[in-house]
Length: 413
Ligand code: PMP
Picture 1: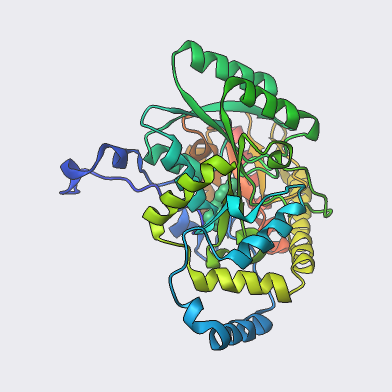
Picture 2 (picture 1 turned 135 degrees about the vertical axis):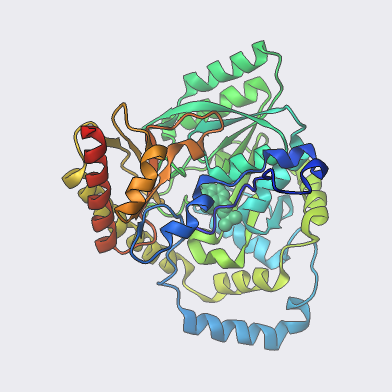
């Protein structure tokens, strides 16, 4: 769960409190990070973290490749590169994106330190303090942290099992406009969403794009899970349907190796230059060695076969979680049924507060993330995120059984 960033708090014992910039006050520890210490105890089944399961990676051939890479291209691989990113990698990324219908040009892409950095750059170039970002409710905690750090205000848009609701999007746009607020973009994870595990219906995709285009609002499509459909299925990326109004964020964290920190942004041509300048000022360039490792991996490994094996790993774990939920959860609990990605979103009966319940769950040796962390407005107290990506199917089953016991006690109180 270390992949989900902290939002650092400044507490009253901090002698530097009076020195911080106003934007630092928006940085507080995320619920996910706060759970890290307890959830990583071995006796606790953690359904809290979102760490990719890398066990299927071919470590032997990868280590040989990295050795060869340094032997053959060490002086380039260990050197600065352009903020734009390694050209060969950008070419290969176009092949990856083509799997979801995107025809991007390598020139319109910026390679970043994970898609988290791409999120930071996009917010940096578009958001002034007080600007509004529309985002699904619930939304990715790391994105909420980034928006807060640039003092942008998040207005959530309701979802259902088919993802973002177009009508709710229209209403949110109208309400913010009536209030005289400036909406800069819609941030969305349309496919296998974190944390809700739902996917925006294909029939809604064009409508969402049309609503945003008509309102003059950009769409930031964050798609780290899109290739992790459990039946190998893919959905057309929003970017594949609109080149002018969508900034697409991609990542190798879930399809290859999260620790390499290689992601990218594909922007409308006019925006690309600002992103490169922002990337330069943030980090000069993404690590050249890591970019070359990914580039070589895409050339020499059966990366599509590797993704299939990840799909299988996660499908087994999703199956274990859904059947355990079916078997053990008390009446009145409902949950999503993801067909890809890492997460299930669970809603508990009225009267149960998932944040208040959390210490009792940890006592019963199971951890989850309370729903409030995924909203900027305090909503989510009857929700929780359960991740099935990392533990074994047996541990998932046991974790859900423990959680159901805690919930049953809570409901009886
Ligand atoms: N977006 C979403 C929706 C995520 O779930 C994550 C990782 N948890 C990221 C972005 C960041 O991924 P990375 O920086 O590793 O590419």
